[in-house]
Length: 117
Length: 116
Image 1 (cartoon, rainbow over the protein chains, first blue to last red):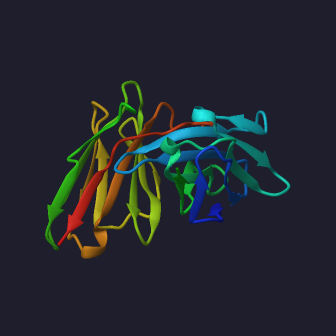
Image 2: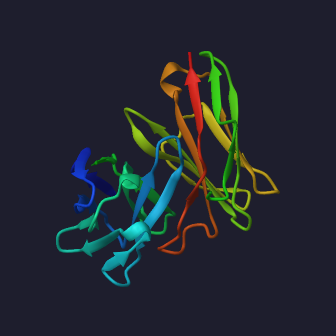
């Protein structure tokens, strides 16, 4: 079975400082990994995705994530936080739950990012 | 704006009642997914339809059912509602069913259901 662990439920950074949101996953097959962002009272928006090409993935709004198979991690980073980055972030794994089955998304519990002025 | 629309935005009802949530996928998307987001369970996959047929099932209760119509819109029916069913229900859509590893899902704004 696949699972996702977001190691921090809340992260607080000052505007202009780096952001690191941590994610570890487990999967039996060949997963795809995503980061989604959810702003208050809004739906989820895809930030970036990993699908077995380059291990360093660049997304929208300056975010990027690195897939490290040996560490089963897919941490999200941004060099300089902006006030508009304040939101909840979800790490997501997409994989087959068994051989031949359909792929399903499994969401992490989310990390609430606060950006301080 | 993802292109996925959901109605209604808010729904308040009483225990024991039945409600229907509606979703229209992005133009051209054949797959529709339903998710439930609650404080205690987080975001959970409920069910997926592809071109009118059920494709995958997640943690969907027997009191819940869904369908996808020929015009590709989908409805999620929740019956015998309980207090614990209060949650944000998201619909998402994608072009393909699941065969592509990078199959991106586009999410609607959600329907907030409150059961009193």
